[in-house]
View 1 (cartoon, rainbow, N blue to C red):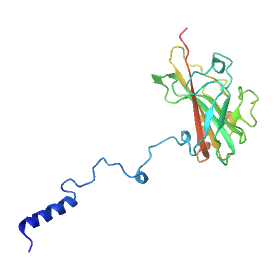
View 2: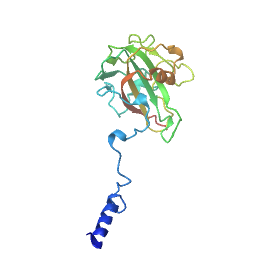
View 3: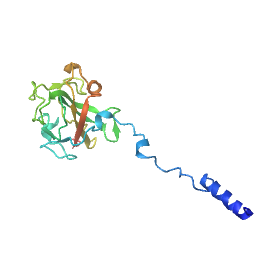
View 4: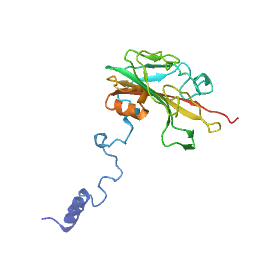
Length: 215
């Protein structure tokens, strides 16, 4: 026969197992990895395969871009090189933009675009200095529109407002599984991003800085 004290103990144990006395899962316990929902990201800025790396012999990542490659110098595109090429590359594309224009404290809603280039040959692992020359030095290189209102095809280098602080310039490289059928002269950054969607095998970026002092 069950004694009253035993019945109390049994009821307490059942209640505990049902979560009434602190056995429940804490509210802030993270979900398992396979249940986690990834944050929204720009798919064109997220590598889909590891290993692709972009660099330049002209400047180190995070360091100033030499004046030669800016509006204060020769305004030619800097040399770029990459490694860790994924399988299946059919072409390469490059975008360079400045998210700090007109100033780091008061940026534009959209980054200022300095270069839109695509259909770079699959075998390429570098772009020479001034690859954006007219005609381009790189085989098959097609160049779209930058953000300038005039003379807006091809590369135009950093030219921030004097005294607007240090700007960051992101060179973004995309490995594509196709070539793109685009009218280069009419192609904007957004056009290129839309055309690349679903075709990016990997991406990498290199950031350099530039600042113009007040006169």
